[in-house]
Amino acid sequence: MAETFDVVVIGAGPTGENAGARAAAGGLKVALVEHELLGGECSYWACMPSKALLHPGETLWMAQHTPGVRELIKEPLKAEAVLKHRDKMVSGYDDKSQVKWAEGAKLTVVKGRGKLTGPRRVRVEGKDGKVRELEARKAVVIATGSKPRMPDIAGLKDSRPWDNREGTGSKAVPGRLVVLGGGVESVELAQAWRELGSEVTLVQRGPRLLTRFEPFVGEQVAQALRDIGVRVFLETQATKVQRSGEGKGEYTVTLSNRDTLRADALLVAMGRTARTDDLGVDTVGLKPGASIEVDDQLRVKGVDGDWLYACGDVNGRNLLTHMGKYQGRLVGDVILGKPAKAWADTKATPQVVFTHPQVASVGLTEEKARKAGVPVKTVQYELGDVAGTSLMGEGFKGTAKLVVDEQRRVIVGATFTGPGVGEMLHAATIAVAGEVPLDTLWHAVPSYPTMSEVWLRLLEAYGL
Image 1: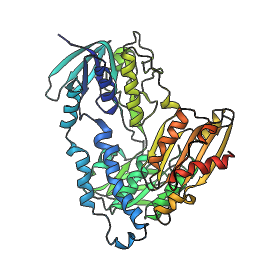
Image 2 (image 1 turned 180 degrees about the vertical axis):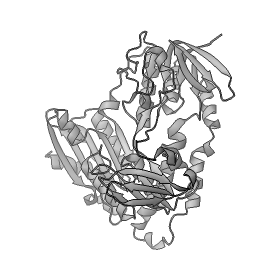
Image 3 (image 1 turned 90 degrees about the vertical axis):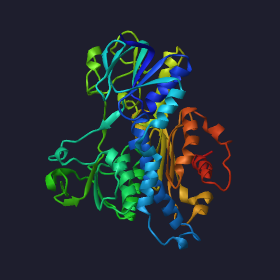
Image 4 (image 1 turned 30 degrees about the horizontal axis):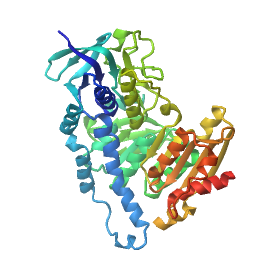
């Protein structure tokens, strides 16, 4: 006999937790299925551990640029202490506290690998081989996230390189690290391990880093990496990987520019794919291994009956933890019968890259806005020229840029680089999501002397 619930959620990362908790708070009986750790990728192998590795380096860098403090800095980071703190931030890779939270949120935790077996039916196989059959009265939510993509490079797969899990969870600092990729994961971990003492080389096949951001972002982050001793190769690809010692020794990476790199660790961060290959989606007419296409209420397209939903990385709309959580909350509301529609994940997405300088952006870049046919005007200001930034220390720099829809006179995109700019981003997110008119923003007076005064300078540059 199948156990019956109102809602069955497959995947208990931040997205699934939010979807389940929202539905349960509305009075529904919810099963939350997870075969690894409750809290998912972000809590244990991505967001939290990577920031735990990065923050000490940023703190040291800011201290080294602050008169009266830098004179006291005599030593580099203590790697052992940083790694110990990282382990604390991931609860020693133990999810007991997450399970306790889920049970307190009135969720029934079902440990095991969940698979669809047909409409509203989920089969869960535990690590002990025991099977539980679940049936959902109202809805099944797929929130299984994504997994690293392994590019087709000769010898790469057999060499057993690091992905994000080893990249954030290594118990020791590698003597030499090669990073393949130029996105967020690549630049963050390249900087983190370099500041912990590793010799780091980053290889990016494109002409710049962080290509989804404004061009100045990649240029500034690349320079910051070079300044701390990271070797950065642009417009270069790895063509072959070999590893000695039966896949346990030194890596040899051959590049398209004919250089050869030798390393103790190799991190591959070249994109992610949806976790749908072993999920039973074929039983309801979907393609295994592909992202699940959904409408703006996160209902799965091509499946009749309005019972199947997909949120977070698995639907391919927006691969960011906070946007997955947003989708999860929205799914819970839709299942409860509340009017809800996702749009922020396509129009007003905020993102922070926790390098130093930090990168913070929301909405459209200038290029994307122009491609979308928006009548664009942009304004830009150097953050180092703001009084609040200069007071933080010497040599603090950065850039702020707004992308304005001239016809509607609203901001459709904003990008900031500089020390701590992630904490300034929500003001821009409100302006973009709320479509606040520029003439209204002019009366939102920033405090002096703070870094936020750059908003005044940007509006002056616009002509207000």
